[in-house]
Image 1 (cartoon, rainbow, N blue to C red):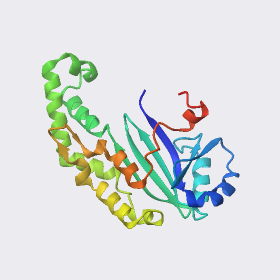
Image 2: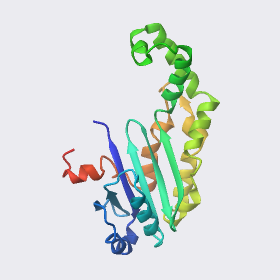
Image 3: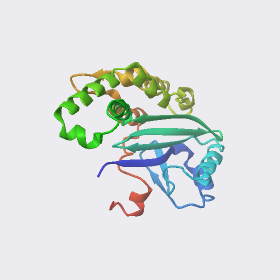
Image 4: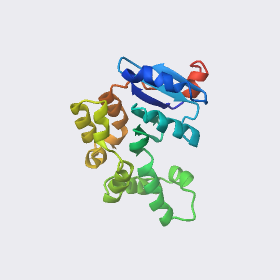
Length: 222
């Protein structure tokens, strides 16, 4: 089973103020201490899909409490949304599937009548062609531009409320599109796949792993 982690983090110094407001939240949730610096809320609405959840977080952040919704899906990617002052002030999404989607789009145009999911596995020549297309994709400017779209709303200044200057500078370096997309031919990967661990290390939230509302509701059995 692949990791799926999601929750709403906030600095522990805001705990008394947040707990007072949290009593007004009508949906099921868990509230946990993460470490010495961070606490987290785990709402049942794990992806913040309902207007009720989103409005509550916006109202909560309007009480001068910065809230960082963080999600990490091992197979597909990770991201965050930062709420402060009653608005969403920053966000970013890193997709691990972007290069594959772009490569498959190229191959589908070349071979519109075949089932790529089967033929690429069965046909060695087609597999070699697909690998070459994938290599070209990850080294392309168009791939870099698509990655850039996912981090376009990263606003480092809003992290200054609860991070040090050094941490903010580290985040700026991490969310540089050239850094993220620099491909290591020897390893066959880029920093994108390690970026979530670097993000967690910079913020000091390494404990945010394999945890979400469903996991906590099951008593840790899922």
